[in-house]
Structures are given as C-alpha cells and as structure tokens.
Length: 188
Image (cartoon, rainbow, N blue to C red; front, side, top):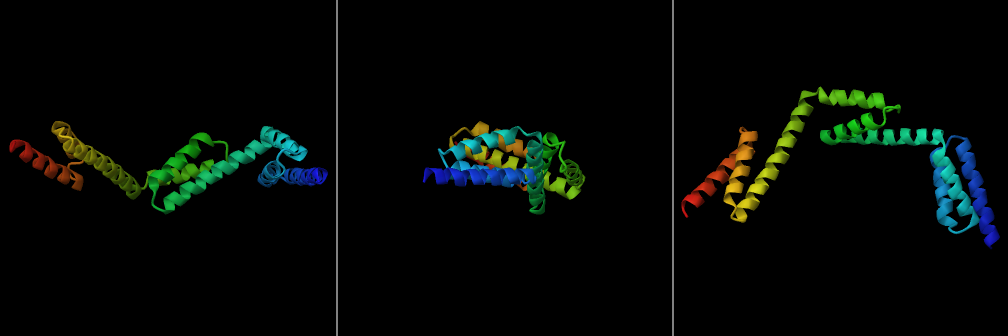
C-alpha cells in the first residue's frame, strides 16, 4: 500500500514538472502543495517539498509571482475605485507603483493614480471623508473627556473641530456641545 502511495505521489510530481515546463507555474505549485498535503510523510511529499524549494529559487518563477501579485493589487485598486472607495484604490495603486515598478501593471497603475489625483470630485470626496473621520474621532474624544469630567480636555477637542473645519456640520455640533458644557460649568 505504501509503495502504491509513493508511486501515485511520484506520478503527480511528474505532472507538476510538466506543468512547470509548459509555463503553468501556478498550477505546478498547486499540484506540488497538494502532494505535500495529501501524501504527508511520504517520499513523494519530501520530493515535492524539494521541488517547491527549487521552484522558488527560479528567477522566471519569481517574475511570474511578482506579475501575479501586481495584477492582483491592480484589480483590487480597480474594484475599490469602481465602488467609490478612492482612498483604498489610491493606497493600492501607490503600493503597486512603489513595490512593483518592474511589472506590466506599473504603467496602468501610474495612469489610474494620476487620473484619480487629477479628478476634483474624487479629491473633494477624499478631503470630505478625511474631515468626517477626523471630526468624528475628535467629537468622540470630547464626549469621552466630558463623561469623565475632564471638561477642559473636552473643550480642547471641540475647539479642534471648530478650528479645522469651521463651516462643517461637525463644527456646528462642536459649538453646540461646547456651549452646553460651558452652561453646565457656569451653573456649578
């Protein structure tokens, strides 16, 4: 029975080598990984591990892996862009541009990033999202300080919102909460 397992495992290794020869790197890796998993402890598994190690040292394989990784990042950026998640899209594109200059996805990533950065509506949405995030965070901090009777710190955070985004709905809320707090403090 053990011999039959090793023979079957070695047949699969030969199939993986054929896939590699055909340039089907990902399929070859998947096949070798399945041998390691399915034939655990056998000679075939040990041979598959050795073959995976050799494959990972092959410059052509590493190139294919980098191309696949860059393509995956580019697709994630496009999906985020299509969903209106511009910050995520731009982050993915910047990562690709910084780390994968040597790939075929590089130029497309540069072009898409430039389009986003030059789109006034996108940049306005990003600025608004950032402002909203900061304001919500600062208002939450103010609330926390207020609940913990640290009124001066609460006022500092209300003032941050008002100073940073004076025309926003968050500044209106901060002014209202600050006034309430002042009335409360004056009444004590």
